[in-house]
Length: 435
Image 1 (cartoon, rainbow, N blue to C red):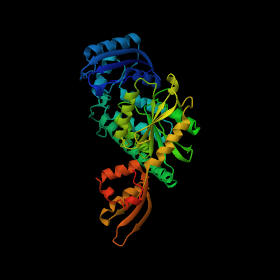
Image 2: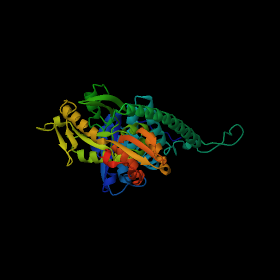
Image 3: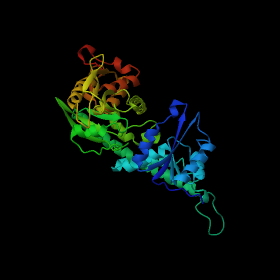
Image 4: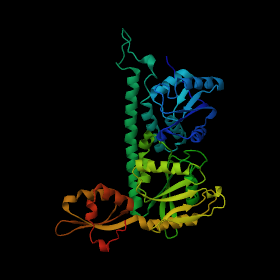
């Protein structure tokens, strides 16, 4: 029987520098991830390669060096700062005689620890099952053959086939339940739109200070800590502005090379980001990797189709900089582009609220469309966004439609229609079409 080794609290870390920029990872970030998972690093193996080794990822020589360090430190888990194939994972376990985890598995484990709500736990389980489904082979080699003979004939399935069937069934069941959650969230979003409250969503790299800022602005007690992925479950609160109010949403933090299984599993959660009128992109301005982290968040926003939403960059933690005062930076059109604040010290909040107020007036489109009967399918798209304010028909059967929606949603619809919707704008001189 081939036993899978149990993961423990002492770990040897493996970090390889690749010449390819897309494969590069940050060693300090790996150490923070390991601390967040509750493990303790007892050694680090580093090296440089042009491309991964097919069998061991790090090459046979480095694999022997890794095995020697594991034996010397008595570590019971090896954690790679990279994605491993199932075969590489198993080969390394045979050499090291301990459990081997890759970066994706480590992040999934942290998510499993952090999930608090029923929905969050389902989303994490779905991501884990999808990841596990590619790693079943050789985990049950002692049961890979069916036996014959009197009293030994079974249902005709190997254990591997049984596991795959059970995984497929569980994944289908979770997807069905998450679809129901998604519909419930959609109903809540429509209710908020009917109340004319815009949604402002906090996004940013993990540990940038989103939850601390959220708590300070809304007087909430969302869990916030100096660790990666402290927040998993989205939280929504009403935020009062100088002349109105908005709904502020705190969401999960992003990270470079965020596993696709997680992006797919957290579709319902990330929907709060996609449907927001404004994104507050929180960045840690005291972090040396601020520019790289900013670019990684932009990549994830593009992946979830939220890159066209108006962003206000919130440069957080200015209290860690020398002689730096809060301020608002404006772009060439006079719109707020960047706000410098400190969530921990509650510095610059008045400027942040002012910037949000100024942007809210810019991101809402109110326009009238004359849609012919041949293009009636566009009505369904506006209904799904709950954007229709008034609808009537003229003598020729054209639908005169008054709509109110976010600038990002209008641009998205106009892009999908290849400019056809823009041609339906009725009496543009009398309609606000600043979007």
